[in-house]
Amino acid sequence: MHTIAPTPSENDPVGLCMAGVISPEVAVSRLLLGHVTGEGIAAMLEQRRAEPPSLRWQALSTLVEARRPELERLLAEVVRAGSNHALPATDPLAGAAEIAGFFDRAVANSPEASVALYSLGDPAILATATAEILDWLNERALLREDADVLDLGCGIGRLAAALAPRARSVLGLDVSEGMLAEARARCAPWPHVRLAHTTGQDLDGLAAHSLDLVLAVDSFPYVVRLGPTVVARHVEGAARALRPGGALVVLNLSYGRGVAADVAEAREWGTAHDLALDVAGERPFALWDGLAYVLRRRG
Ligand SMILES: C[S@@+](CC[C@H](N)C(=O)[O-])C[C@H]1O[C@@H](n2cnc3c(N)ncnc32)[C@H](O)[C@@H]1O
Image (cartoon, rainbow, N blue to C red; front, side):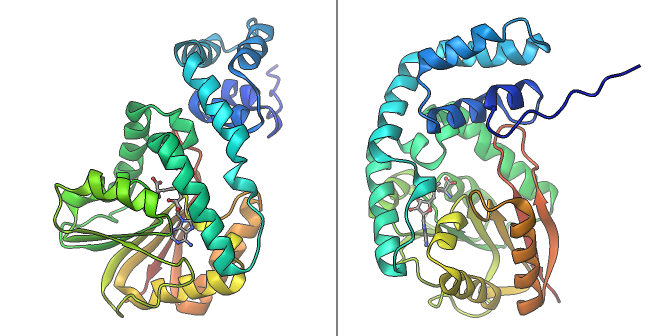
């Protein structure tokens, strides 16, 4: 008789990793966000050394040992800056300025970790995560060489730079000038990538029917933090800017609200703007635990 192992709790990143639910990189980043030191993570692993499957344990253990000094540095930064997942909701303009300040400081500390803590500051880990996003967009036929793309909350421009060879134009928008400076350096080889500051309140500046893809990778949770009016303005702006057949792709819609609530909200966007909800809260990536939503403009 087979016994089915219970799914580990969301509060047990090591157990989730060993059960194959999340990657070692995401497990470590979650532990850092919980203020567990590199030493603490190593001790946790030691206690679970005998648990199957040993290959997952080994992968986690190898990652932690290889990156030990970096973990202590990242943890110090997480403790100093506070979690960006927990920024308080204030009025939308002040909230956006606060978020911008957070990311200005984060990018100065570690560009890679500032956009993806699970990269643990390692450009190679971030490149793998970026490649899996690009591959997935490609598999879903969301990339086209004649496409005009908006990278909303572009951060250091890793997606804008990766999209550049595969698109006609890329516009990156961000609230953080520090992020934009880094993105400009990384996207310098691509004259058809434009990077611009946004106040983070709406997408009113986008022309109607001017885009084929609006991509928001781990940036929409910050829009959500600015409140429902700001969310509605963004979705309305994106829907208006999309050409028929174009798609709004949101990878992570909120933090901590739960997938059922986010799917319900995405469904409301679809109804309000005549967008088909093609993907609703799937977790398509191996390295990153981002949840995907794809809304396609009909026609
Ligand atoms: C976690 S980072 C992700 C960056 C990038 N999308 C990536 O995956 O590499 C979130 C980014 O969203 C930006 N951001 C937050 N709120 C925003 C808003 N309302 N409008 C535009 N950008 C925003 C932040 O400044 C930050 O660069």
